[in-house]
Image (cartoon, rainbow, N blue to C red; front, side, top):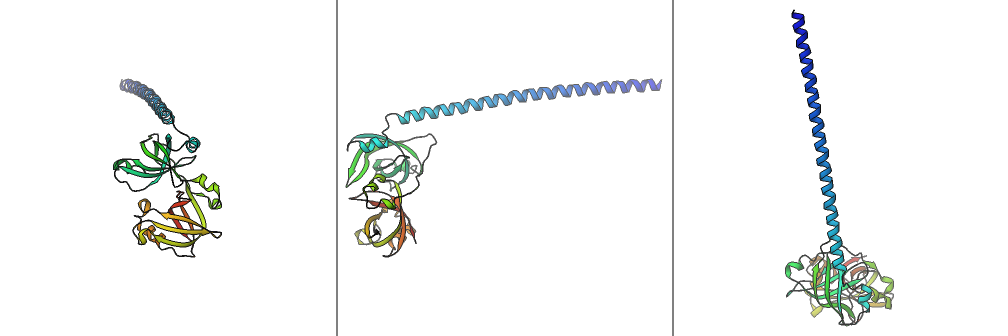
Length: 267
């Protein structure tokens, strides 16, 4: 009798165990199914979000490209022509009286934005590589081709561009040098001829004369561009005749090349 009772109990326990295992399996299957559905839904939502972002980028790009003047057309345009360009900030001078002068460049060429209308808050956002759309007028002064009376807007598409300095040493003394006007450039193995301060004392622009193959060229440290960098200002102001240097800067023009210096390496 006892054996029979034990057998019944064991059988019941086994049946309960099997039922429990079956229920556990069903729960696990249900959880896996829900997990798969949630994962698929998340992936689909992420894909839709990505596609939406790309669509917005395309719309922004189309809006930016509308009525934009190419660099070639900018060069060909008559002075005082109305122009609209898309370009990237490389550096800018000090902000003053709701205006700022900006050095910009894109893959095709460079634009010098003279006294661009700008709030102090926006000037702080004009960091290296920032993409902007500029509307203004093509101007020329003492040989420098620029954009004047300009206004701008930020292009918020995540695109940036920082130009590398192009070595144009071999263009010195040739008409080809002007093709690189306003671009970030490099001159190597130049010899210091003289250094002079505007108003004959430190605290303003520094005029540097360098020579190459017995020909002399003018360079300038624009105080409002980087004169507040005391170490750099003292380095340039302390250059001595006969020193050999590599010079990097923006190829500004004033009655000929007058590069605005941004870096100097003394050899």
